[in-house]
Length: 472
Image 1 (spheres, helix red, strand yellow):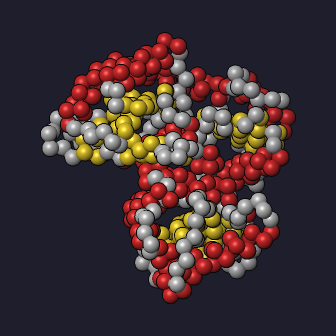
Image 2: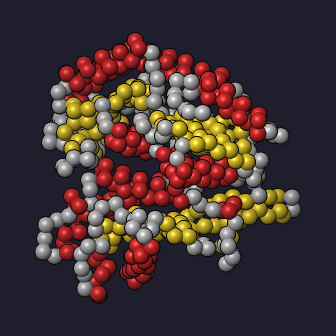
């Protein structure tokens, strides 16, 4: 627990998906529920919540044609809505708790109390952009691993039977996904879902590209390849939307879950032991190229050696036997080990240069490019295999989260520009949007003046972003 006076705390009250296009008899309307969390909620309570949500969305449509309501604020909760596909709606409700600090016999204690029935302080305010993004992202991840909701429908004359397969898929996916939803420490990075790329010199990049070409020629069944070093992408053959989701899956779920694996384990997905004939196969399927009428269903093979990870995508129609993985291991292993020294050197050079140029811990930045989803941040501490977290002064974290999200929301309304704000914790936040490139700089230096802030930002921009178009 930090030393700040008040801390934010959020808890998930419920999360549900329901069908809006099929007509069930009044006493069987509960059959329209595709998924509901918590699972032990009574049917009456589920239907009351879903009926309330449907009424809110329908009521909001009377106020304009710009789309349905995305969020609803009450004194104790925040509700977020998403209509991912025609005929389906999903929603989640977040409960707001307030954590107060209590002094007792010189020992600082904390307790969670229910919010009073009075307007809430901004100090415990959630930000719609961040939390609504979590809801939308939960659908995108469902679609990546389970396909679209429409594709899961069963052809039947009975509405209940039509939804049967979809309900099974939703229960399987969301029962795991919700456990890892980052409600407590969600910030603007979760709204952007950016990708960290590793820039390389021409010779090193050519070696990576040569390895990819060799592997794809040796194994023609491989339709696409992505290469990472630690948590940074070096090369990818996927489209932008797909690599964004795959990258998020790798860095927030697969890599952290693989920390406990034996260091000799190379296949993070595939055979648990490539040398054991009876080894269990763990190969997730993903649905790529969602813009197509029929997305491509692929098997995802993740192979890691010496910090270098190769993601291989193979059509789901191809059966992979044990001999394939043995051959793949013999081909990839020695080549990746030989390549890893070059890649590691490039990563060290980039990291050292960034540390020297950033200057001091009192100045941190977050950069996001909407064109290619590139993301850089010294606001966050990034440890390979772990979720990145804010590393500002603890007392400034809440202010930074809210202020950066507010500025991003302003830019979405007003377009390109630059805004400077001083937060309640005396931190300065400068936000700049130029040609779909976001830059947020946080300065926590005491007694800093506005002119000093602008000078520091200009220096930072000239050093780290001199090759990027950020209009004055």
